[in-house]
Image (cartoon, rainbow, N blue to C red; front, side):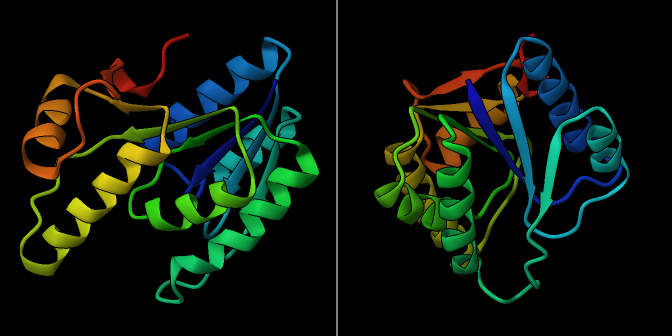
Length: 171
């Protein structure tokens, strides 16, 4: 199976460590794994590269708009013939939706890791993105019950797709 993980970056942090553990486990089971960093690679990403896992750095500039993600993600997915997309970032639902119009992954997963209390326009944007994610992803993984309840009650991601997997992975 050919898998792509999409993250902000692979420096030090909990999300990065979870993604690294998942990528290593998937590679040990015979999967071809690619980690795509929206911004910069980092220490954990370099450790993955040393273990033979491909880590790509898109180096998108902050504030440049995430629509710059559509074409690189499409090209990488097509070149690698990716079958599965794991998204470990928030706020990329619209570019992911556009990309999936042109490239058909067999499965698409979103990991939700935090409880965010949005107000005003940010809350409206979060709810629009939640509605889009309900259409795009095959499964939305919450890392705790509290995150799942918050996503369902306040953001609008709904039950059948929303599943709790502690820390976002199940090996």
